Amino acid sequence: MRVAIVIPARFASSRLPGKPLLRDTGKYLVQHVYEQASRAKCASAVIVATDDSRICDAVREFGGWAEMTRADHASGTDRVAEVAARLAVDVVLNVQGDEPLIEPSALDALADLMAVPGTDMATLAVPITSEENYRSPNVVKVVCDDRGRALYFSRSPIPMVRDGAPDFAATPPRFLQHLGVYAYRKDFLPTIASAPPHPLEECEKLEQLRVLGTGGTIGVGVVARAHRGVDTPADYADFVRAYREGVSRRAA
Image (cartoon, helix red, strand yellow):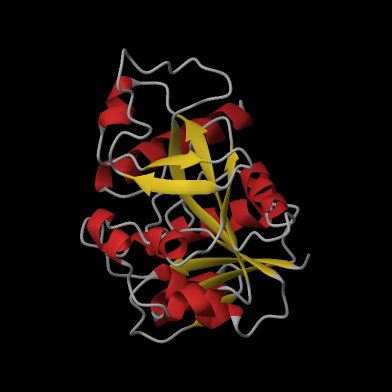
């Protein structure tokens, strides 16, 4: 398979404006994401997709590949689809521009899921190990069939345990937290990007339900740990602190 990683990045953010261009580590945040994605073995190309010339210029400044897109896209998936249409690839990975700790091995595992015939799309999940995460509406859960294909995604606790308490130590894990990284077949992207929002998607505010609601298949791979994204100023401060500590340890 020919695989490309596309990183949608926009300047506007309600909680952290200008997020991709934050540079307290000496590197742009989007540069950290780009460098992590470039370490994945699966991809022949890594591209930042943006509608903002400042982000485009920054990516080209550090030697990365950036593509300008239209400004009227409603989602990152739409932005990825526009860029993917220009690429000679079979599979496209969508990595958010605020995931500086994404693990290259996780991206390789994601690409491997697309080798399964009949898989339109793939994503990752991590075992849920706490009652707090199981109950939280901010933690998206996924349940799968015996072939590892998603049955449903929800902000509610699924599967709901009717009797007794959830067994978070069960093997294989029964309770999975969805991680927001995706792989698509290139020829499937225009189909899903052009489809109207599905009623399930509108209820849960989860874009991946558009795929399930219209009969698409989503393969799910389980990885050991979640990669933490940068959504707030506090998240970014934590990332900067951890990055500096890592640099200091390597220099010692």
